[in-house]
Length: 500
Image (cartoon, rainbow, N blue to C red; front, side, top):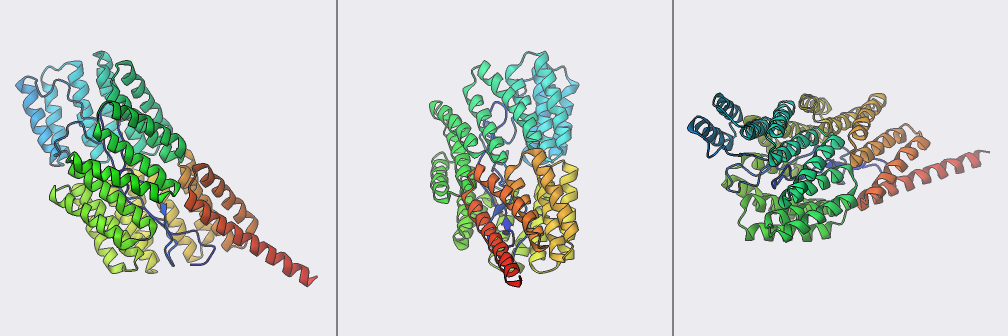
């Protein structure tokens, strides 16, 4: 890899948590475009995610979104029967059928709180189907019903879930606003576990924004409450997020220590999906350390657990992650096998984001093979999915990938246009890490064109953001490139002097 190439990027699985509304929700936090140096690979990576725990896990409070059920399990048969059937269907990932059963509950007379709960449950089904606008519409109906019934707990859940739709679309400031509203209500009704949940959500927003110290502060506040309340699940979630902060800061040994403690906790409380998430996090650390065989060992353990509990979303995500590892090892055909299997499962279970991620990573393999047209086709398919989902962070990642394809083709004007589109989105949604990487890639294009002043300007902007984030690995890499640019500038000035 030429010294001036922006370093290749892969996305990996991070077991952290996002929590919504008034209950604890465990989600494996995705870090988009985590840098890793790969020889002869300058591709931008696609984010991968291990989804939340399967609904079949018997921890009612552990969900991606709040499954608020106020009064429904004890309701009259006209409500209880379709509700019970809907819950079974949702556990089997048959979300469209579950929605029909939830809607059947409205045929009976329902209270305001029950209507709020039903709209939340329907919204959650749409969310799992990646239909964020439909999900938001039902959460807003839940908000209205909860207000009419003076149901504070339902209102907090509705507001938190509205926040997660904005979070999913990459609209971080809007998400933050709803999380803060939910936090205020939880504090008003003295719901301490809900308060910890909302603090954790807010921390994740700052994590995504690249404000790592602020994120760390919120996670520590959440952990303090969870410890006081004797909530080991929450403590484990907080630990996962704190590990994510250290990972982004490049403090890999600290992150590894924390994730191993999280793994110990998950095993002690017997939460198998949490154990799998923690194993994936440890695998990620070793991947970032470049110890790829060790990373594969942990990913395989996570894969085995997801297979045992029939959690196809987790299984699909880890397959994709292992595909990235084999790509890094140069075993491209093996990487393609894993990624194609991941793609097929994502399509089979209707996981649109997983499908787009898999397509993007398959595109990266084609790019490494020099099959740029096939790579571009995969990236274009992924871009259309993210655009239809309204997932702007995903759009930015793919636009950057497309820009890199055109850069490899030597079509630098097109490359610059796509990188600038990615930069605009990342700035709009407040993704500082993505903004810095886009600035670096733009600097790289100017560097190839020989416009050293413009290259230096963009790389210095990228460096300032990485320094604000405290991202030590990226700081070191960017400084190295800037140093080389100065050497080229000095060399050019020396040649001019000799000519005179």
